[in-house]
Image (tube, rainbow, N blue to C red):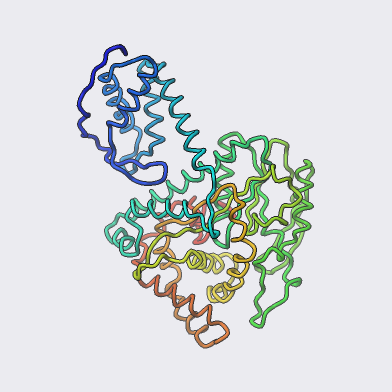
Length: 458
């Protein structure tokens, strides 16, 4: 059956699937001919030469894909290749299937080798920045105008679903990177600046590892903050607990060393509302086959985990890489997006008024520049923790509170930085159409870490 050489014209494109998502997130036109060529190349490797059969198998693969792919979503290249393998095997072409699988594995190896080098120049992961921007362009949400158009047209629901799906697919990729070092890595450090989405991302990676049979234990470094009595106040009664010195680093390293030896540690608890540090009755224990996950601003800061050998660590960095242009044609500042998130979260979860978060933000920025950004190049993986649809959501929660914040800081010459930031984000939020319904945001979305209503317990 695979011994005749026949060439046919391209298959007519009469399928409900019109576009596919490439590995870099780019959306392109669906071309059935590419499936035929892939099958035929594999058939040739298996000593076959019947192109007409490759066309027939393409038709079967596409029918299978249309049955499994939801009408509201776009298939990825990986999903299409999975379906090709299934179609070949189910239709009795084991040799061709094997050749296709081997070819796919080799292409993956070459692609991995090409992309394995984490390029960070001037402390900016330019490759990831570009990929994020391309994704936004392809999904029509690269500018405030386009984002508003999606909100007004009713297409915002699709944007929410596509954004969440893309985020979760990136979680799977990071988990796979970690799994390649299975048996070696004992500690995964998830780092990133304030409100970049570290906590939920940590939980989601943990879920993914569990699906792969990897047990994990989460250690929350927030519980290692020193009590406020050990921190000096500034003239506004504010504390600088953004730097690594706000954490009890000797205690963290003592606990890490103890856990790596398989011994239990008694966990501390930090109460953000009272500012007090105390010990709980909870014991944390790490088995030999388990990985410890740590979510911390300063996960890349060397003294945080110096008691653990470098080869036992996997360093993961997350940043809110918001690649959306405002009405002036400038990209929204990543730090402004994170400040908006923190204003909402601090108000709901930590009893802190949004104005105080803005007034405190200079501490956040100072610490990021000193203790976080300089170490990005040491990360094994860098992750984009922004959602293209979230700016209108922040408008819903914060726009009404901004005039009072502006009034407060405009009168204080010592808080000029807070005044400038508030004016800037107010201008941004005013330019956005309001988000129609926050109830549509999935309960497991990492955005829920800030706006509330999450399926996770923080």
